[in-house]
Length: 503
Image 1 (spheres, rainbow, N blue to C red):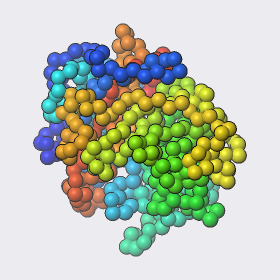
Image 2: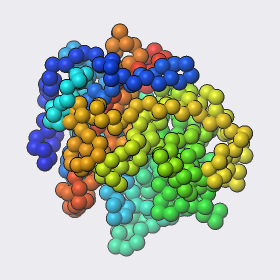
Image 3: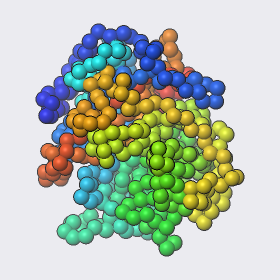
Image 4: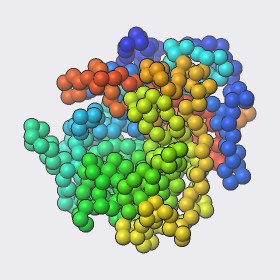
């Protein structure tokens, strides 16, 4: 599909060969590398190597605007490859959240897209023009897969104003109860604010959401198979009853719009991990200044025929805080090695955000090897907080948290024609980075080097938007931006990343 935008043609034709923007070195400049230590191991950020985007006015096969796709990304299994010309190619499966919702939630059916890419890493120190930078990561929309629930019913993104009774192996779940004039068929439909995404070897996939927060498994055709419900301490309760709305905070459980943003899996697919965006209400989640201590859960999913996967681990993760003491909520996580994960924490500034200048957007490291496992303890009851008013219980040791890959390093951004801070134009870095994916560099001289892909959730912000056959104008054109970094991850077991993406 050929995309055009206010920049003109972006050369995103299926099958079109994208030439290298300039002759460049084949290795990153070591003077630009940033190293950190984690439990005696040295992790290295070798810098930004590619940038790409899908324009804000691009549309997909349903006719809707392509937006929000940075909510989750994953490599389509078996597609990633190294090419003889030094490029890399494959397919990313990307997942938007709940549609254009600046003026309220909409009846947006959950879905995912396949996006083909060609990565031409740029290791030079000279600053590329914005147009040349776009050639380092070409992106081509391929297809859309829509999500359905029981009885082949479309899911929706409308706010979860109702609760459906447990039935046929499914727990009580969030459904839409919209006001008129929304058509009556929107009632009693599973509502999803899609966030995390994990692709399984058997073609099924896991998706975590904000409303439940639940973890859902879908078949390869997008139909719902099963649901994982978290401990009572995480379920949103108002007056001791489930209340899934995202508009207000509950009395206990996950805060409004602070569900399972992070989802990842071990390379063999046997252990699923979900990370709450920030602290539960009883753990201090009612205020940004006290919402630092969030929860990481793990489930045994080695046997996909088991109706209710067992909770096998739960740990506390201390999120970073800004200069004013407010918590920087996390937007994604990714498995690195046993006990070690990426966590993407950020502020809400940048293009399409609260202000033009961002102070924190990073893929950081956590290690849970020394953390207290609190699963199946009193802390899974909301009456026993792990951090009352944001103060961590003395019996709990949290995960080790180490800052790592900085998305807003001005030197690195300038190499790709980007910037942080005013002016608010198309070269301003997006506000809401919410996804991570790893692929091997396949460099024999640097066997622990990997490409770290990330994409932004642009909130469907377009002046030429389309939803359900109707045009909308969000007052801003905010493109779907992608970044690729090269990192050294010394703890990764040989072949595990390849196993995780099916190559």
